Length: 308
Image (cartoon, rainbow, N blue to C red; front, side, top):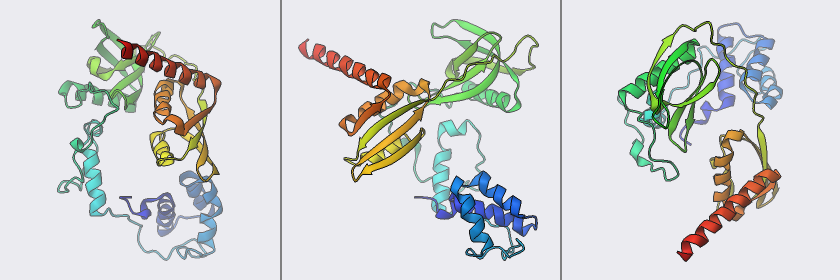
């Protein structure tokens, strides 16, 4: 862990409470609201009680505080070096983060320290001037809820010009590419940013309306995990961006329920297969069928290539 525990949720919440107490505007209701908004669900049972009963001797009975100044959480040198290393990432640089205070800090590592073996090598040109300009124009349009005029090439190199309402920027770690999801007059567009030649913020034409799209339901995957060769830690890391529930069955076995978007199914399938016998899928049957179909395809491919 690079960051000190004071940057954890409980410390952050108590710091916000103390900030209002220092300013003399803390009330019972406000204390409860801060905990509900910024802490975990069960924290409403523990944090207010600990503060009011002075188990944590930080508040007075009248909801004042013994603290005289607003709490601050300064970064250590190690933490600054880690942040500086992150800010060297070409993708993060596209968002123009504020680097104030890190000018003379040596980064903890360089971007070339890491080699990605499970990622395509034809990622977006993050340092290209035209790419950066288009990216930042799209960001501005998203923040200001403005329309865009976008010129781009398709896969077949046909050139299109569209007027659209940008909805979101999407990043694929597998492809190492950003995509723009935008609403046009009649269609929804998904455009690779590297294919965009130019984009310009403009006023919304009166004839364009944002279409109402049906929401895709999240799917649920349930599997047994056999904790061999540190499999639990690796699974939690590989699937960290999915909402999941983990139940321990015995000393070496866990049941994991994982919720995912249908668009992520192919990548999820590949990741599950990479764990081999350490993962046993229980449900749904359609995901099991996809696993079996992919394994059979791989076996056929292997046998054909071995005989030639």
